[in-house]
Length: 331
Image (cartoon, rainbow, N blue to C red; front, side):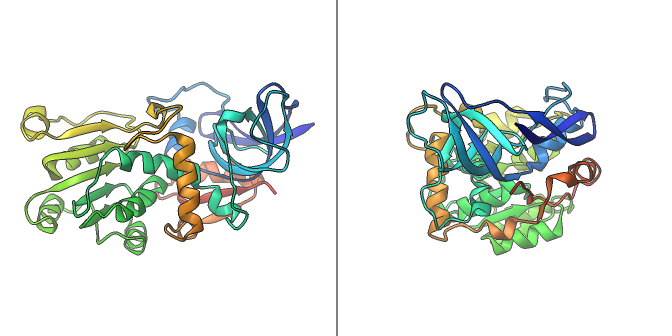
């Protein structure tokens, strides 16, 4: 059978093509996708061939999605045909064939698949927040209010961060962050940005910061805003490191912790405090959705058909304010 698939055929070019797809064998499952979510930062970097990406074309991405299992291999133990599952390390395609270890079952039938489609990328935000070890009443800041940033705002709110500051150049995203739980929303291009953060935190600086922009200038600002013994979770993928940092004055002497929060360094088998496995975080977020503790629908910008992929990715390449909650509908 054939499966429609979005492929980056060369830099700044995406096409929807049909590929032959086999059967699920061994420990793999075949999933008919309902929705896949565009991860704007990662996918823009890859299709543009930026630093710290593979720069090998053709390529296909799309690690965040949800669908129903249609086939299972003979060694699959916990997943059965008909299960609705989250798909990690899949791609933007009609059918994904992936290892059983890369799917998480959606147990609650009342959870909307559109909400569930965002859970994997939300789990990355949660992983970055957990590593900050935020205590009730500590100040916190999120730099970069894309998908990861918006979920990080909500998780920090639930963790008891106070005050909570959202930071982004885009005024619409700042407004949404306030709706999702931020106490303040600031523009990092303001000349007195650091002074505003210090004023909000009563001169102390921010105890915990999630840096999601991947922009080195934002990292420099995060250090300038950090409190004594502050922590900065590096959740965004920095593609270019071009800002000088005074490591003695900004890191060593004030005891600031820089914490790598890439999803690949999670524990693989068993969770422990502040470091949960991918599956445990996904299940926790599904439970939060079911109990209305986090808001996904407000983050959804648009739902589009896969046939629009060439236009969608041209827009992603050319528009830094690309609608962050862009979802492909494969139904």
